[in-house]
Amino acid sequence: MIREVLRMGDPRLLQVSQTVEAFGTPALHALIEDMRDTMAHLDGAGLAAPQIGVLLRVVIFGVHANPRYPDAEEVPDTVLINPVLEPIGEEMEEGWEGCLSVPGLRGVVPRYLSLHYFGFDERGAPIERTVQGFHARVVQHECDHLEGILYPMRVRDFSRFGFTDVLFPGQNVQDD
Image (tube, rainbow, N blue to C red):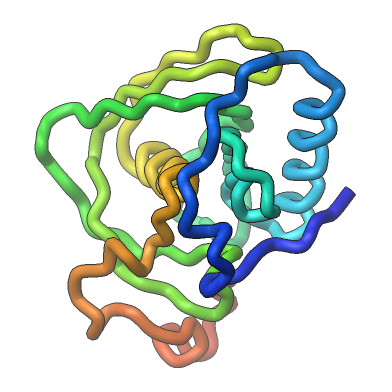
């Protein structure tokens, strides 16, 4: 089922999410299906449970050949529950980000270039990956939602933050 995505200003987006205690439950399965349906409907790169009003530590993400991300490397479809992120080194990279909860805006956000993350899939099987570049950026963006952080809170230079249609006139740039 396609769910409404909360928008910046909704206080639920600023709350810290709760740890998932039970895997493989009908409720968790239904949540993940709703998240998949919602993300696909909106052509998103990822979605966190808090964005649909569920304060649990669940994110999904995945990017394949997508006209909205013509230069992005593919990111495997992933359900990541109770994630833990560990930056590899201190090197950061700035890049443009948007968000389904911040429609119509884009900003340049610094993110760790390389990252090790682990957590669990919907059945409780462990997931562990070392990633870099766009994949690392997507994971950091989605996991920020679990801490009540929206990407504009990470923007350092507000001359590189604004409405998508003004920043990129004539381009079909949408929200993430």
